[in-house]
View: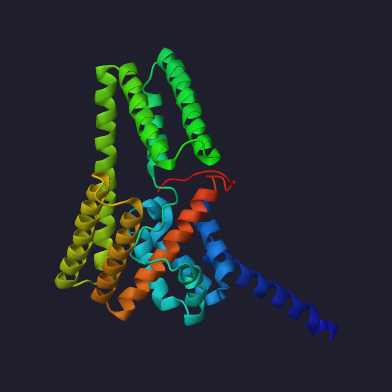
Length: 313
């Protein structure tokens, strides 16, 4: 009996080792970020081994050698996952979206607006082109206005001034701050800032257009669908601009603006949904879910997997 037992154990060990090697080879990705994203997604969704392997094959095929940062990457992966995932796995993927009623066509809710982020990016861009003397003055200026803004918010919280008065004073402070920044900059620096803005905008537009081209290809959209899609988005954009102009002129209050925008984009989303068939909508929803997860993953992980870092793309 021992005569056959040892060879059997050797064969079993060899077979198991080969199986593990094949499994590791099928799931290892050349990007730490993608590997982490894959592991989190597989764990959260409770994916089977076949679904995990299929997903990793898609991530590797479309994302290796840094291609995961190219426009349209997630569209390609989403199209394949639409066929690979089971209905139960998709239900888990969509769970948070469905709970929060997140539209598959929107950009998501922006808490507190995006003015703060724009200000930070702009401030960072300005700071890079300043001389050492200008940097010292700029830091002092920003700290001074930070205290002033903080004081206004405290006064509103304490009931010392009304929200309307605070808004008026806030606008005046922002104008004064911008005037001081302009006075600090040379003409060459101002020109450089404007050029940097134009370059960023051109890059964003190019990325958006390239991503849209991949979306059209992946979804096999007809010319009629593309036209209807573009018209629905443009109509909503024009209507939103008109509403913002009315608010700016004081023709409608802020609550009316919010309600009108909510109704406008709800109607737009219904129009957009009616353009696509069932399979196209499935791919679009998977893309939205993956985009949200990827964004969350990148905001919480640094380039070395450490929390608190940021990764662009």
